Length: 344
Image 1: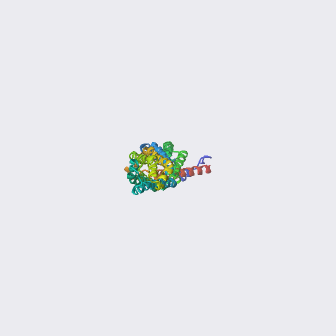
Image 2: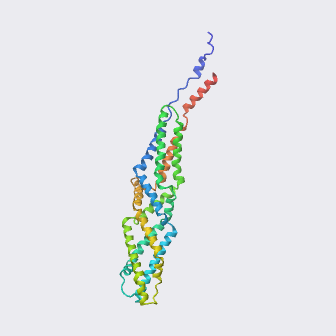
């Protein structure tokens, strides 16, 4: 029997069986991407990071003028001027050149060692953390950090959900995978180029050292010291110096007159510092609370901040790359289809 022209021979059916159609595309990468995206969106909400980070940014900006070498040297010079003025008074008293009693000056002489100790300790703690402060100030503005979690997280969650749907339909969902990949790269870039790994170790010691200082109780103590110094200066200027000069024209008043010459600048600097501390107590408390929000995990939030961006970014990128690989069955199906087209 003659074969019907144009129909494939039986041998072609035997030697070239029709390959099975490809299965639906891999879906687990989209599940992982969706979960990571949801966690990134929820994390700053659960930890209260949005308002706390804004307060942290405000605190960093407010403390800037007081964390410089020149500013701290100025405070030390001011304390030395107060030291010299007290020494001058003690010398006059010891030489019998102080005529009468001056209660406010006497209180200053009596209280100043404690004042000096507390204020030197505060300035020393600030100075010890200048490098830590500079590292923290160099990172992206604190107020943006929660958004750098939430926005890539929202992109990942959206890409994961929509990509999963296309994968169920047997599609590769290249657009959604690419979008997820871009978000993942962004997450990885934040700590690497934002200096988070360099800044992370700086946060804990700075918080520990400033915690005893940035409190309302400490502010009230400093304000009390300031009142003592202001009262003493007022009495030195209005009564003390004139009385000494009248009774003992030859008396040395160098320490006291130097204090008078520096008084306006000195009081302005100290008032600004105390005001900055007072205005940022709540901001500081918010930063401490943010750092403690991950303490149940065994570490402070700032210690792991860089990894909170890097690890989800790596996982999301790995899932995206895995999803972009073309399954072997799809390749086989494509080759077989191409061969049949050539035969025809």
